[in-house]
Length: 277
Ligand SMILES: Nc1ncnc2c1ncn2[C@@H]1O[C@H](COP(=O)(O)OP(=O)(O)O)[C@@H](O)[C@H]1O
Ligand SMILES: [Mg+2]
Image 1 (cartoon, helix red, strand yellow):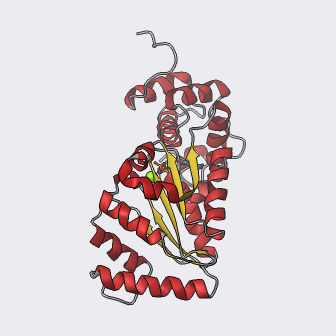
Image 2 (cartoon, helix red, strand yellow; image 1 turned 180 degrees about the vertical axis):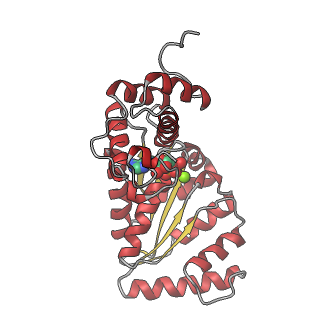
Image 3 (spheres, helix red, strand yellow; image 1 turned 180 degrees about the horizontal axis):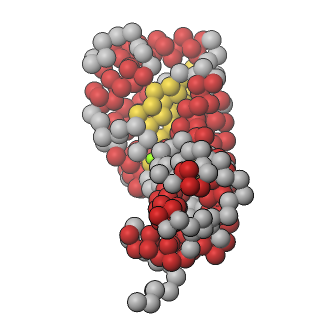
């Protein structure tokens, strides 16, 4: 809507987890490096956690690009409220296993054959599970068993489970002791610092065609950081709404007043002193 007004070639603050817009904060950079390293060195289980909107799905999408470019097959389970039967059906579908997808026994048989064949060629296979905090105990147990498959060179299936901090709590419980002990790598995404928030906004605008952005002043960026606590998804919502407001007022700069209005609409909990009036 406001693209032409600001001379943008794409929407800078989309909420989709698009790797093309990746801003490499130190935490994101480290998480992605860990994911890639974990897969390459056949570590088995990797755990990725972070609050809602900190970029977990974006990291998985970046890993997906990496796997695609290295021709490493993977299953990507993004709906984690599944029965074990549905879980195996999705794996069979993603890995295109030659079997009856609704039979768990057949899927396991075909999966085993595929993993062994690939391992014999010194190649690996990946399972990514997003929204892991929603996994049932039954499915977690199936995942643990899949993680046991190995040959002398390492794990046959590299498993990445991503989820909100509740996932960590869940894995701390006794039922998950065995799975917890098998986690080889853990990464945690943190919200941005004030400086990173400013860089993040600049980087997304640059990606959309606006180099050296002058819409958001340092003062406004600091306010955005305080209101969003540095959570990328909230930053996107605020900036998108502020660009829309500025456009409606035919202004090429976003002001603190615009921020206040948007923050009220989005019901952000103010980190600074309460506003007058
Ligand atoms: N490092 C990053 N670089 C670019 N965009 C990011 C980054 N981290 C998060 N985002 C953006 O923030 C929003 C939420 O990210 P998402 O990966 O869906 O978070 P989560 O899965 O942790 O809830 C998306 O629009 C995503 O593009
Ligand atoms: Mg997500």
